[in-house]
Image (cartoon, rainbow, N blue to C red; front, side, top):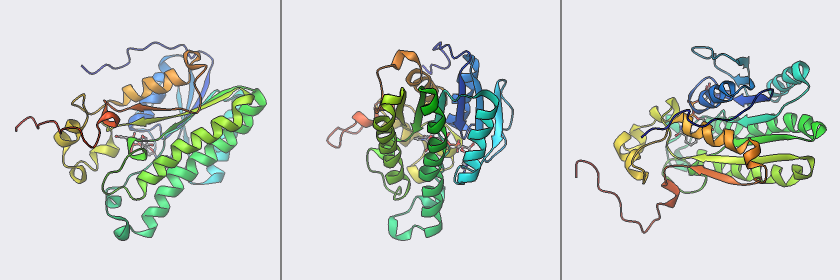
Length: 263
Ligand SMILES: NC(=O)c1ccc[n+]([C@@H]2O[C@H](COP(=O)([O-])OP(=O)(O)OC[C@H]3O[C@@H](n4cnc5c(N)ncnc54)[C@H](O)[C@@H]3O)[C@@H](O)[C@H]2O)c1
């Protein structure tokens, strides 16, 4: 069973910014917000292959503070409001799947600049507006690799852990302004980012097998969690991390491995 787009939310009149909306999880988040009535802006360094109705592409390198400020200001100029910011744009280059002592400095810097500092710039500018409104929601897309170890994620893993802590920190700081902040930690999800590194991770069947549900997830399943967290149904939820991972996080070090299908 691969549930997709089955959850109904009403985001009529809500203004949403998603970073990295041209591909994968970000694209699904944009589509689901637009489908539920929101006006959506995707801040991405890459043009989308096919535009989504209700989603405006704003060219942006989130590693650059000026780009982030320009994107946020564009949305504020249009609507005088930002209801939801989803920090999602991130990279995990195949070349970064090496032990720390082999990691090129340039890759460390790119991963930190985009995956960590980019989230900070977007939140900093959006939170100023949300604070004035006395409402808003920020969701950081983190990762299961921010919770537990894997080989070859010397930069990506610690930075994804920091995405979870960013959300907690901002949740505390802005709670009394009516702003909620949370993070979502996906397991392996079927996107170009994961497909680019299947070999480094032992192949698709091996990755799927590590998830107790026996498969990798869909971008829509992550989008559903984001839409729920940003909805009024989650009005008493802030500072939390939601793992959307097919049970990967419950798979303990002492658990017996699942046999592979061809064992
Ligand atoms: N796919 C997974 O299995 C998985 C698992 C855990 C966490 N995540 C997280 O989910 C998020 C989305 O991942 P995905 O798999 O959809 O990736 P993806 O590569 O499919 O999409 C990432 C998008 O971000 C954009 N982007 C990259 N650098 C950018 C920059 N500097 N400025 C603006 N946009 C930029 C890309 O153009 C692309 O559209 C990331 O935060 C990733 O760490 C993914």
